[in-house]
Amino acid sequence: MPPLLTDRSLRHLVLPLLLIEWLWGIGVYFVPVTTTIPAYLAHLHASPLTIGIMATAMGAFPMLLQLYGRSVIERFHQRKRGIIILHLVMIAPYFLVALSDWCLAAAYPGVQIIVTIVLLAFSQIVIGLIIPLWLDMIAQVIPTPVRGQYFGITSAFSALGGIGGALALIGLQHWLHDYVFRGAFFAAGLCFLLSMAAFSTLPVPESAFAHAPEPSVFARARKGILACHPRQNFGRLVGSMMVQAMAIAIVPFLIGYATSSHGLRLDPSIFTNITLYQAVGACLGGVALGWWVDHAGPRWPWLAVTLVVPAVLLVYPHAGVWPVLVVCSLLIGILQTHWSVSAPALLELSPPGDKSPYVAMANLAGFFPAMLAPMLFGGVIASAGYLPAFLIATLAGGVSFLIALTIRGRHKGILPANEPHSA
Image (cartoon, rainbow, N blue to C red; front, top):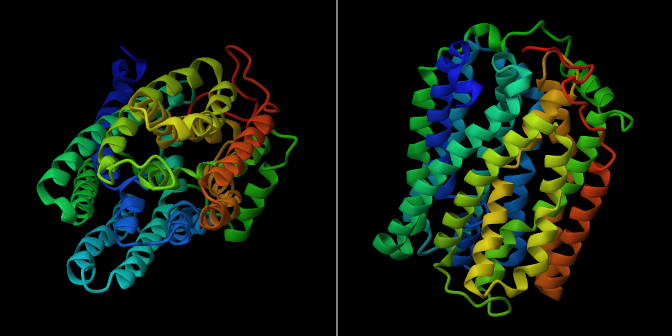
């Protein structure tokens, strides 16, 4: 049994965290940005460029204000309660999308497209405030030697929940037909609420959220920028993640290619099955990658992640054959939990102390690629078709791989010099 589950000092935290991730995973896989959301916009007759704008909102906006997360949470006397409140603000738009679909979609599909993108963009901005705080909390309560295992196990539980969510999504498709999207957004919001209810019972000490106050957000930004020097492992990881963000931006367009008359010409309802395959891939990949990080350090697992997009795009034009579609979807599922590598890598390779400014800066560095790449791909697809966009994304994945090759590996049994031996 993994040390995380046998160590009594950790078990009382890890078991509730697994429940939280399981419930959150169910919600995520009702409305993944790789399948349900682009399929919904296509159902409303959105153009590829509009879907690119949606992908920008979902992929780039979480990175926009992460440096301000610490400033926001410091305004709460009880920081755990503050994180819960921020989550509730982030969850509300999913219920509002379901409500607006009922009110607007049939008569004003164009308005519903705009409302959906705006609501989801707002939700993603709020989750961006939470991400560095959440990862810093994990850094405080989970020791370095088992963080990879932690992220692997929790990502697997999230994906296990996702398998349940994907199966439920298939059931909703058969039950609700054209109203499946309305039900999916509502169900996702409900699962997110249940996850936060579980978090409210988690015995996390207040000290896990507390740090010596920084002079200003600019001081946090300066710390993050200095840590991103390309001569340091952390800076090289950030550089690879920046280019990888561009490569991953192609993923929301794959469902359009699968159902397009210019692509694989599959039935539009296939998005539910693809969601299920991705959840299975995320479950298997999360466990394997987390174990790999603990045993070999983040370098080789991250190199493997950078090769997923090129590998998928090279064979996706032949994914009209069921086994090929399944394999591609399983690999894309790994990208859904690539944070089982990137999160422990950011925590391990960044300087000690408050991790939130380093996580925030790393994600902020990916803002412009994540913002521009979806619109670039949407424009290329609209004007020249899918294959040129696939080529650009493949090249981006290759460049990310080359940058990752410069990351120095961890010596066996020795932690990085800038990382304490326990959190």
